[in-house]
Length: 116
Image (cartoon, rainbow, N blue to C red; front, side, top):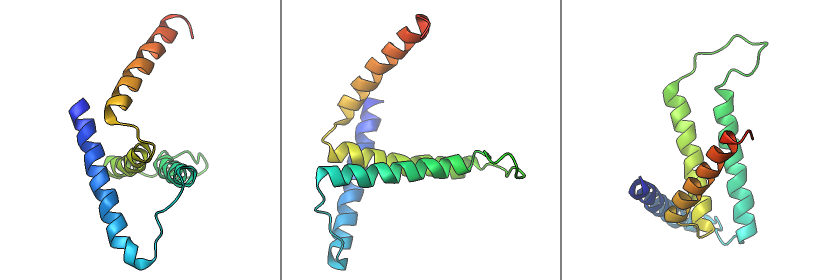
């Protein structure tokens, strides 16, 4: 699993480089500070999460729409693109994410076992 996460990070870096190259002649600046990148990427992540939420039929006053698993999956992947880019911008490696996840997961399991 760790290797697959590493592959996702590598592919995202390729995409980010491709986007930078293809946009540089169009006047798009990518020389943002770390703080600006955090702001831009967390905004994109929130927006993608809201697109996922739009599929949840949360509007109780409206007739529910059929949810498309494929559309939901696409929105989740869009969110993942921005999440991985944020990790890359902050210098967080896939191995660190894996270890942090495993550690937090153990902690959450302990919390549940202890009446959290």
